[in-house]
Image 1: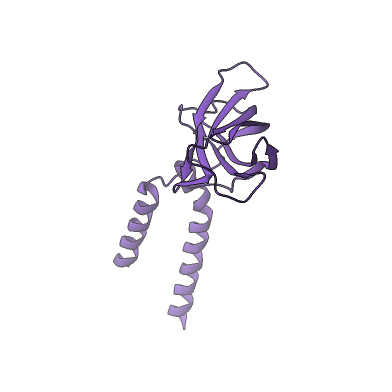
Image 2 (image 1 turned 90 degrees about the horizontal axis):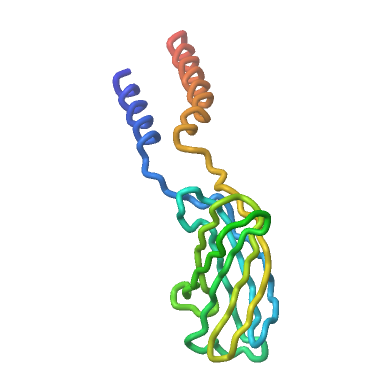
Length: 176
């Protein structure tokens, strides 16, 4: 019985004081797919999370390739993401994208989106082949993961049912 209490206390401590992993709650989704703009074919994927703490929660991946031929993009090709609120006034925010693992065809940037609602998105490409821009929009929402303190409340019914089930099994074993 003492071992069981020790394991229960250990599990409760682990759940309550585990580090926050900032897990991703869902996959990014496309807002532009293979749109030709100037010398480029551009796709934009996003995970538009809103934050209250000023952190850059709006994530954007820009996929680029040449429009006319399959050659690699020349060095110096880069994307800039600009977001601006549509339904209310607010500042226009910019972020320079950087290549993911050194790959110019896949660039990433995160932008502060400080409230829920519609945002206009503009991705501007500049490089040796020339300049281009693509416009779109996205609906920013808060990250829907529950706070850590609520996990205890959500898990409580399952723990109680597990405890009652284990108790029933122990009683049956003793009676046999």
